[in-house]
Length: 511
Image (cartoon, rainbow, N blue to C red; front, top):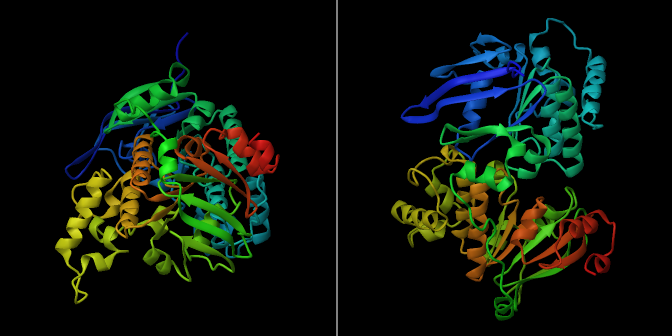
């Protein structure tokens, strides 16, 4: 039986940026009615390949064949007319326009009507959003939406096209489980209609549950393409990173170490902001990694922000090494030894347009300044090199801009920036979001090394396997309150979800 002709074929695609070769003779094919995973570490060439399909970049070599015809895609607008829709990982909506205006922006830009029929536009937008199982107000301004709802608007915008090829780059990174389930239902409906979907994700569970085939890029070259049924997750990861990762998660804190470091480094007593956080108490032992789990919107990030002064605490106390702290703003927390990593790396974690060295020193200027307060660039450089080496930062030197780094290395710069403050406690909000599996494993080991050195580490994560695999204990937050606590040998996805969703009381989950 002959193989059906591909909906989309890329043959021998090559692309250089200056002296750097991003792609070398890449072949890729997409069938109609399939979900095809495109896998690889950050920097492997996935984004470059997708930008070539979308017409953002032109290949230096190679051919693109769409539905049997050789095409030259000379820009995103041309790609749209050809039936290619690309949803980028980074949200690119107009914040001061409505949901409906954003969804139909391409149509509005090419329209010739003197007056806009906003009622009809909102009605059409509501129908598109309903396909995603959402009741987002089409008349709402995008700036007023949560990040997850903005991501859904991006996806809805792509679905308004007469799509033949839909490209999704990490579409569930900011979505709840329910929102993700609604999205996958739509994707399978589109697949049944004969649409070909290219799916980029670092989440192995999503890839193996929903994708039919996988193509793996490494260092700009094809290293594998075939049905996912023929691979295990470990085999796929091995092809992506070119090596066996060994222990993906580092060993947990031993019982003896836990006894040695039994004293709490951080004590939180009845902390509340009277909005999203309602009287939460817990302790963090020296040298342990404490996980904080819960459904999106449960108040996990808000708890960390209230502890470190990014949100005003109306009630409660925070004690560090037995000392009660007066934290009114974030700089107070940093000065006392508490540092926070935001879940939004590019907006609040790093300065993309500044060099690595300036990023790393930005919260610890006194360490790199003279007694007269003058910045000493040589000292700044040495600090950046030292912390970069500690975190195995891969770069062409600490003078290059952070924007040129892969997602995993950008995250390492964000962590190095915190370490420059010499913290006693690290509050890490989604520390591995948007990074590839190899970088995730490295960050896990970095956090364990820091804990072993006596730093108290709190990890907030929406990925339950990460909580279970990395953390020594886990707190579960529900509706801004502590729903329960689980020891490392009590943590299962079921136990965490039952506490997070309110299906059981803490005693029942830990029984």
